[in-house]
Length: 221
Image (cartoon, rainbow, N blue to C red):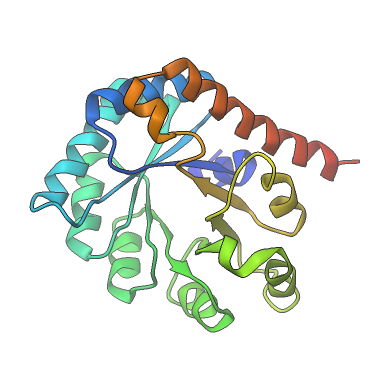
């Protein structure tokens, strides 16, 4: 099974933003034990060493977790970040926007491309530029009815919803045609991260995994 096929099956990506590497490694281990298979580590463009910072995290995650977790880079805005992420061991690139040079470099290097878009025009543009899946962002601002309406003319374009994703909304998003979901703060909750409460993080991760499984079971009925 390819990474993309597995993502379409598991449907859940956890987003790590601003978590220190030592804490992130322990949190990732806890999430892997809870059934999470995909983790996105984001670039923080406020940092003067944003590339070095994130790529160190990606390398550490790959070394610690191996094949147990598929690691991607998030908030990728520039082609040089794509190249650095590839060198660090990433398998997929996620962005909040659609940028032709980022998509082209991602595909040239053999990685999966998940650019961000919101309107039908933007979604189609991302798809035509070579996206493997388009990140609908921010999904909670457009709402469930909007997602249903997109499925009419654009059912051939797989969408990843981010924003407003939690165990309560995951089944509804999947019912309405969303291929995958991404969330960070509902699993890597700031208070749990600061307290280094890895059992708490694992419990939240398990709730999200179970929500996906529940939606898939309902779809088979």
